Length: 450
Ligand code: PLP
Image (tube, rainbow, N blue to C red; front, side, top):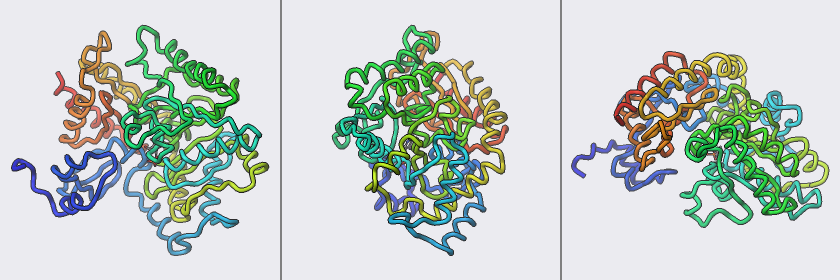
């Protein structure tokens, strides 16, 4: 322990009293948590004054960048006027109603209603219940099973962690709960074998059809997937994948759920990820970019198909959160969306900074340890490879990814590693020179692997 850096007071307090999510607490306490104190633009600053370029937008969420005073002002004003009232039992508030309307102005014509939650995980639990309630109201109570994907992430609640396909999460808490089945992800680099990406995309999409056959169409309620699988490693599906999935869901009469928690609010250069891929989901959980993380808020976009049944047939939906549509969070989210609109951030990602980032990210493919560097809009996944000519992966993927991530961190760059994939998801406001800095620092970190 003698070579450990001295803990700052705050880190010591933190170690004594604060249990962190997704952290090995023994290791964290030994090292002491890095204390983040302030942020501006795409930069965060720690308690020692060190500056980092946050190429991960917090946790894929600070889409408008840090330091937006107008969001703070909107929240402050709302807090003074009406800090809280609920949306249960026949009441609403101005920010909640206006936010629902604003969201609907950016969705397709059949996706005009939203149910508010506080987070993406709660949004997952919400659509999960809605899907079952929908089929029951239609006289098909046996349609309860949900098909999801291996390595997916849909949150940390019991339903969220069950629908997610993360083995390590399933092992903690006897998950998944009953009624959830997983099929393979469209991860061509690792699992595509000799197939072309297009062939592989079709093959894994058709696993959905096979699973529906196995379970019985009359028992399957829904299929859920992220348009681009985020926490699983930014797995960008081959172009053949989504059209085939949408075809199967329609032909087999099961609800299609697009988890838009990461892809929503501009990240792919469209308001929502399903718009980029050209399909319309029946249900779509949202969170993160909805408020750019300034305050916690999420929701579920609900299609007319489902909403009409809920409104006309169901009566009460016995579900909701004290803070569903919280007025202060809704006011912050409204201001966040106003900024995205006013600054044309979605168009900027689609036509300007997205293509610039794509070219810069792709340029890393000339590096000896990079198997593939793919992106859509401002989300990028980079595959580390022990031998790029054969797509051979490193024996210890987690170690190799952490090594690169730590070299980046030492050099003032925050990126995430999932196994042997490096992930980027910067604010939609990142400048070209900041993109250059990300690439330069990541390249320098990759050089350590040679
Ligand atoms: N869905 C996806 C695709 C996510 O990436 C996340 C969080 O990272 C969630 C759901 C859960 O959201 P939250 O952490 O707000 O509960």
